[in-house]
Image (cartoon, rainbow, N blue to C red; front, side, top):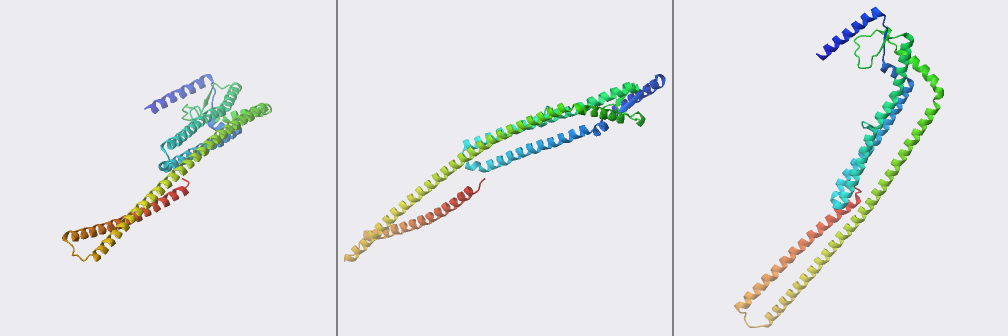
Length: 327
């Protein structure tokens, strides 16, 4: 429905224009701004330079974001080895760096960023030249109306004889040649802009150097804490080993004592010619059962000791592998 109404309005407009043109001799022309821009060498060169600069910005932002992503993954992998305070500190540093990158991205590509500003700066001089050329041609050739085919005006049909885009291009080219003699000042300003850009780059490099130093310091602290934890674990393992050795020695001494007492009892039994009483026989059986129980307990303790040694060896191998792994 809207398209139909727009069509009728345009048709009525051009009909009136045609009638007015026939009666009063009104002259009409149009230009194609997109065609003109494509054929202005200075604009195309500046557009190419801006595209190169934008690509450089994108690569820089993507590289920084990818670095943050990899470091965050590495931190999550090391979380089990870090203290809560150290993990939170490193996570906070990563978040701060990521926020800086996002701010830098907005500065370059945001609604009020460098890309939008430089595009406006790039378009404005050419648009001014086009406007001035159209004004000059309109005054020289007595045009009453000059439309822009690339604008929002709907042109259902446009005859080529009314297209003055090439004439506008020639006017801009002549004006550009006249201006080349006065471009020295603009070149100097461009060189100053490059110097400012280099200073900004140096500032970013200095900030990156400070961040790298902080990272190296954190890594050094982390390595020292890891070595301290490792030494503490080794000391605990050594203390437990000595404790087990002492327990084994005590059990061995107790077993030797029992064996000695058993041998003494056997000697006493052999030396005695009196028959054993029922109580003595029961006591001997009880002692025999006790000795057998002690032996079984010692066998179980020995198996448990061997199993603990195997677990200890496995843990040491795992810790050794973790120390060798840089992540």
